[in-house]
Image 1: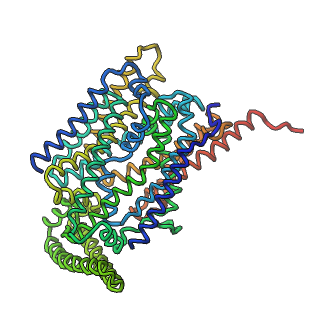
Image 2 (image 1 turned 180 degrees about the vertical axis):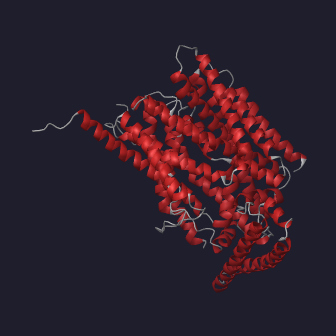
Image 3 (image 1 turned 90 degrees about the vertical axis):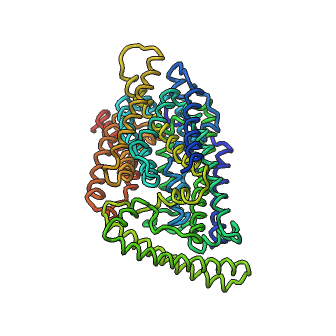
Amino acid sequence: MNGLDKIVWKKEYSTVLILNIIYVLIFYYLMTAYT
Amino acid sequence: MGALDWFILAGTLLFIVVYGVIRTRGSKDVSDYVLGGNEAKWWTIGLSVMATQASAITFLSTPGQAFHDGMGFVQFYFGLPLAMIIICLVFVPIYYRLNVYTAYEFLENRFDLKTRSLTAILFLMQRGLAAGITIFAPSIILSAVLGWDLRLLNILIGSLVIVYTVSGGTKAVSVTQKQQMFIIMMGMFITFFFILGYLPEDITFAKALKIAGASDKLNILDFSMNTTSRYTFWSGITGGLFLAMAYFGTDQSQVQRYLTGKSVRESQLGLVFNGIFKIPMQFFILLVGVMVFVFYQYNPSPLNFNPSATQKVLNSGYADDYHALEDAQKQLEAQKKMAQDRFSAALELKEYVAVEDAKLQIIAINKKDSTNRVLAKSIIEKADSSAETNDKDYVFIHFILHNLPKGLIGLLLAVILSAAMSSTASELNALGTVTAIDLYKRNKKGTFSPKHYVNASKVFTFLWGIIAISIACVANLFDNLIQLVNIIGSIFYGNVLGIFLLAFFFKFIKGNAVFFAAILTQILVCIIYYNYIHIYPSGQEKLGYLWLNFIGCGLVIIMSFILEGFDRLLKNPPIRT
């Protein structure tokens, strides 16, 4: 009772994941291009 | 500070307080006061969540962190977006379905009253202390660099927050945090462009990045599995995820921000907003620090940015040693400027052999620079062993006060004080709410009017404000209090997160098992802390205190399983044949 029943994935969560992967790629580019 | 700075600083702070009070007067009932009438849109929630986490230390310390150690600190936040998604998927729907005011109210629904009260009290102890430090930390820095009275600053920050937080409750916290975030980001952006403007004419932004890169300041990602490195990609993804889940999912100062949403969707979008913008924001603040580093490649900087530490050594018998080191540093700075000019010219002419040559020279000079700064610290320590030699928190404020034009200094001080106020407001609001809802309303017998509970919430918020100011005023009597607060947080956080994870994911675990497991866990965590951390001198501990979070969470889950198993076995013993 009152615990987790079901998980509903929404497209904005995918957006969060994709954007943050892009951030890491940008960081990797900055690291390699400017050092 | 000139008259214009004072005008901008006082005007900004007063505007926030008056706006917060006028916009949010007259809460009718507890829902109105504690959850802002559930009217908040996603962008208000997102900004409020970000403003709560970003305290004054974020804006004072983070640029200094980048100045000394580069941008690797951003990896600490890599687990946060994942935590936001998990909280959106699991925590938010459950809190909304049960229509709770506090996170701990859910625990009574799921387990029992004693588990709710235990977690509420753990939260009050930890967050009450942290609220005092949120006020104290910027006060000690500003009092050191500006010569303002420390106690007066504590009382000023605390009182301003009390005025609008007590008056308007959660709604006042949210509306003022929008203004505060606007001022904070505007101030940081203006400063960033001013720093770029202060660099020599031929140094473009791209060249500035190259200069920072040549000094290892752009080593953003560390994929090594080295557990002794404080910030790596893997520790950010794992430890950062764990900490962010505990903080955003179970700490009422954050939970209350997204429970103000108009709907589940608005709350989830608010957290998504945080998941999208948190890493770029931290990256930008670190980038400001890196640009300050590039600025000081062409301009003189003190050996130690903490003016009170420098003053202590200059007033001691070690003044001559320190002056000699300062002279050596001046010569080094001249060499540094020449090497940077050579590097920049070689880049311009695309003479890559000369670029590499200049880079090697810069690395060698920076090594000497670091050695000089370490020597300066050791001289300060010899002069006064109690002096704070770590000057990371003072780098950015030193740059602000010595380089920015009149007016902008006032704005940047408003940024720092706004950040202190926004975090403190959320903390006092949550402390008042948990005391009023989880302890007072739940245990008070009799029927009272909605207004009675609003007034009770106001009184408790006010009292927590006074407690926070009092803690801030005595904080400098303790050594390394900020670290102490982090340790106390780590002692409790893991246990509380474990209780919530049991509540969400293991429906067969009941209240008694969790309650006794939580108490046993807390005792064991305290024993582990004492035997592996407390008895060892600083820096020689057998266990990093952040591990207490993992241990607490793991222990409470395992012990709840064991106790639940025993309980079931005693109730339903196996039939003997």
